Length: 295
Image (cartoon, rainbow, N blue to C red; front, side, top):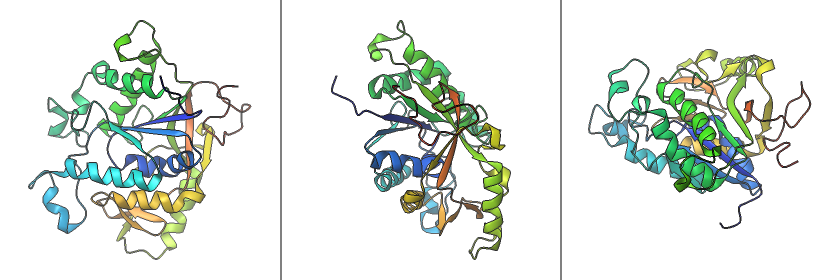
């Protein structure tokens, strides 16, 4: 096995664009510092809505082709963040976007939501045993806001971390590896409230403003265990989000999805340690996801 970088971070997301919205500043920061940053995206996001009128033909209810187009958007976004290792779970298109909760697409045979967790997790085990990350980032059990693919990404990531560490599981997928720390994406409610208060007085073209509870992973302060100051990478995060042009419209430090409702771009990104040993005393926040690793 070739020598691996000293610090290795793996992120597991549901669709192209989720990574840039949730973790863009974190990814850019660690990539710039020389860590190996690997992204696994579970679907192509084929069921997404399309913002630019000139690309509206890509929508699933028209000509289609959105998933293939979003492969290119993701590659462009990763270039902005300096991330060179980005993969689709099981290869591009193996698992199909499930749509929002309760829609017909949930029940498609190839829908990610409709896939056996262990079957999907095996593909991620192979990545974990190859990259050998000390840190894994994914969603909370609700997927941040209840989207079926986000919930499934959480389940698959957590299960894969378990299986990757088992010495008796699928040695054809590589040597066992234990992930030292697993984090869930979070946003502290007071931070969100302050950012939305600023947005209400900002001069944007968005016709409305999203609700705070539309932001994935908003929780009370005590649940936050780590914060990563990515303000130096604010431009990179915004550029990565802008690269997902079918899904995101960026205006300065704000953005909107297809609902055209403004939201703040968070450049300090927050996490909750879900597994592993904290690198700081109880009651303090980590400022490095690798805090305590290898000590």
